[in-house]
Length: 119
Image 1 (cartoon, rainbow, N blue to C red):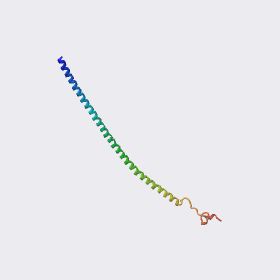
Image 2: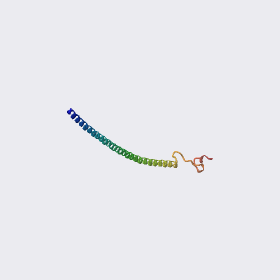
Image 3: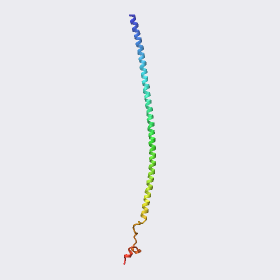
Image 4: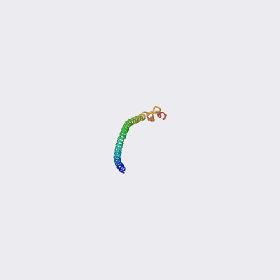
């Protein structure tokens, strides 16, 4: 009987120690879970920062392309204006110059081709 009491006390002591160890381990698990959540949030922040950096790099590249396209557009607009002016000048010159295939009209009173047909 005495031996059973000692075994019971020992088992109860071991059970209490085991329960305390279980609580300690559970606290450690909870602490590690909290640390893991914090680390995950930090990792997400780092990932977000990396994504933002990449997005800003893309934005800079697009902005540079836009600037280049704007410069090209300005050059093309200047070329179009210059060509339009040149075409307008050529049309104006063509209107001022008599055509070589046609004889200019001279009225009969000035001795032109119609003057010889009069009696």
